[in-house]
Length: 636
Image (cartoon, rainbow, N blue to C red; front, side, top):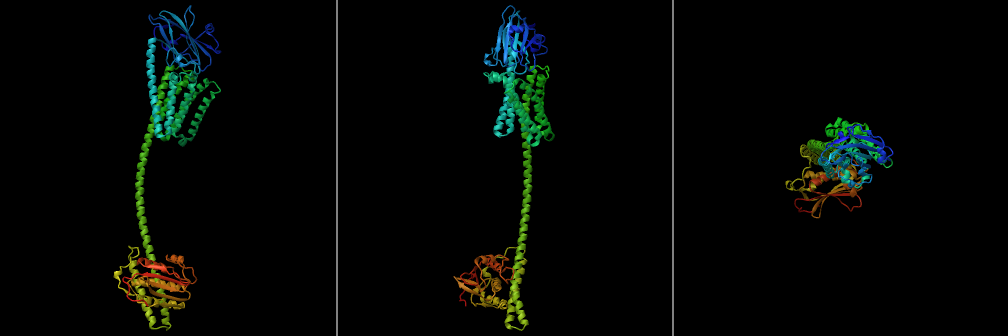
């Protein structure tokens, strides 16, 4: 018989004072059970494993106090699917103190407390026996203590404060993670929030506060809630591990194992639709241990290459492994671990676990921030180097372009000069041949003089231009005031004499129309324009005549060259203005530079080059010359 001399703790209650009876059928009544022998409970609690049996406990009491008559039986359980307790006194009928079943709401309890508390009256000096019958939806382990009314109120106030401190801290972590998720839109905060919320609900359910405050009208759900919240811890923990460790990227095999763990857990939850939930609860206890070991192992694997990122993560799951091991040892191995130690360790571990995970996330983001800063600084440095290289490359490209321009300009000038020399040299050659064969006289010698003057002037001018390598652009037009007006007829006569032999060699009639027009265009430029036009006309005219002269039209002087050749279309004419362009005509020779040279000279001196239209055959090309002052005489 247990001597009630004040509050009695659970270890003293079960020290040889509690006996039990198992009822596999669950059909025994009070009288039938009392007629059967009870067996003393060994250990600090009544633990019969995961069983569907109805369990009977008996404890004899003796009130040895002088004044204390109101007592409280405090059971460390928040809900029983089937619960009855009687007080037996000698020569008195049994008194049913409390009765609960699967549909009894929380409000039906005599004492509004998260765990089951049964008040009873035992006067000083009286003795009695408490008979307790219960069934369990999970583990059948049960421990209880006896309190006076005052000691229970003190215990309730202390435990309520302790619980709500834990809840407040957990709730703070959950809300912080949810806000962080809403602000940053990062999945890792959602995974963490889900895990922390599952841990909070698990603690509240184990303490009975969930039944009291969250679903007091749903006792059936309360009996099943441990399956959901236990599974939630595993599933959200696995999801957090996947998000935090980025296993899909860094550890694909571990990622598949974590996904399989989540699927297995959800499968166990779904199986309760067809099988009893009690074995599922036991399986989830073991699965919780295996999952925390897996989460820790995944962190250790990641630590081999990313220790600084996962250090707090490993610490967090290390504590979770300890708490899961305590629960597994108690429920699977039957180790003597009091419920107080078990639940307090769970509170501490879950809170520390959640806190360390939060630190792990903050630490990781801090490292990511530092890494981004370092990457940004490295990027800035790289950008500066690239800009410097780009600047140097641009400078080299500019110098290269200048060199190419100089080379091209020199090549173009050489090509133009060679082309300008070809015609006069050809004419000179023919005149020499005429002289050697005794044909011609003074006129041939005059042709020599004109041709030599042209060639000497051309070569002298171009050699001077080639020496100016730092000025690749063509020279600007001469200032009209630097050249004294001279007769255009002198230049055209020299050109006609220069190319006369070439025309006669092709049996062409080269005619020069005399005029009295005065021009102030540099003589060499004027001669080059006229010479190239005449040379082209001779080259592309197979027979007939070539006519060159100056005409006044619309207040301007026009140098015109007409031939009886095949003619030019506007499209062909535009194409021949480009260097090296030639007509595809039989017998045509040359480099294709004649019109291109004329076009450049016209452009340099601000003149106007046109293809004259309206002729039925042949080609007519005109260059408009704007003299310094209108000529005072008519052209012949």
